[in-house]
Image 1 (cartoon, rainbow, N blue to C red):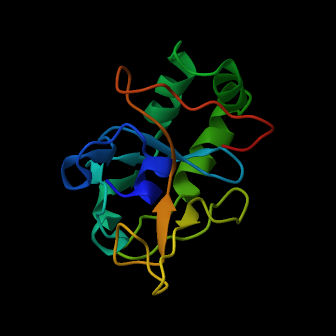
Image 2: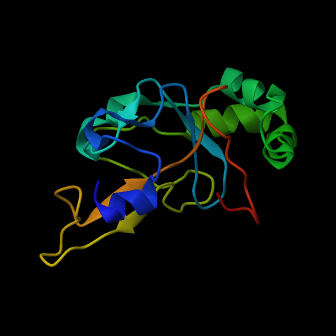
Length: 157
């Protein structure tokens, strides 16, 4: 495995056969930490962003309720959602746009990108482990039992 990939995902064996983000994960904004999308399909390592738009479903009121009830989550995440009135929760869910393949709009809450990019450039300006100069990363809350949940520190994922 390439050294750049080991820095990003040290426990991954075979890149082509590993799930980066499992189905059912909740994608949160990297800038402000609000829940945005529920993955309706797993996203695999080395999968191109241009093919994954259909996998993002805007979070629903039911998703927010589930997050508020999860005891394995950081209490700060649960408390932040509980502070929203039901009307605020509904408005948040309605403002989240559907994604199209290859399109990653900004977060509707903070107007910042909800993803972040890692660069790992080799001598030709491309990554050592993909055909791209950068790799997009998501901040996610995995489904129950899949991995250690996200902890927000200082309002950032």
